[in-house]
Length: 178
Image (tube, rainbow, N blue to C red; front, side):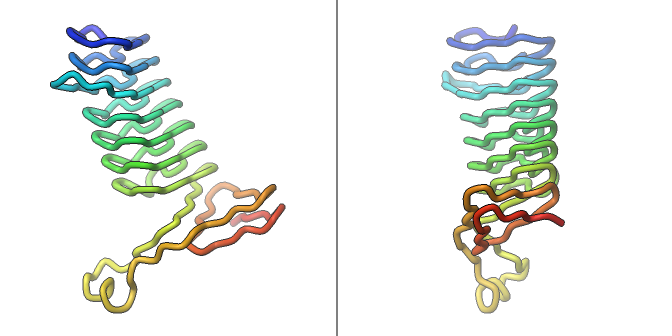
């Protein structure tokens, strides 16, 4: 936090942590280069938390992100309201928002700009929506965006590497594995 000039309620512990910001407030950066590039040009309450080696290192103007673990959320630049817990969790997201990644590499390489995704476990992904076609004609006429809830009942296990698609219902005490 050595660049902070007019900001309040920040905590910076570790070499290079919160080192570029001058006006952001309400940020906690603990660890080598945690939130190192966060930089607000106007007084902004960022509410970012980065704990771990290079956690949130690329965040520039993203807000309300909680990134815990080495390299957690390390690609986020302007994304907001993301939660990443675990080594390299949410590691590819750049501008995505409302994502939750829990576990080593959860949503690590699968999602760069996604919204409303949840991943639990190493390399696991849960989607509440899907839009499989890249071709605009196919999207409009044959494969429209599908939005269905995902229900995971009490005691269900989701093992590493699993992908859950829209409309899935996992029963009580069920186990999903690959």
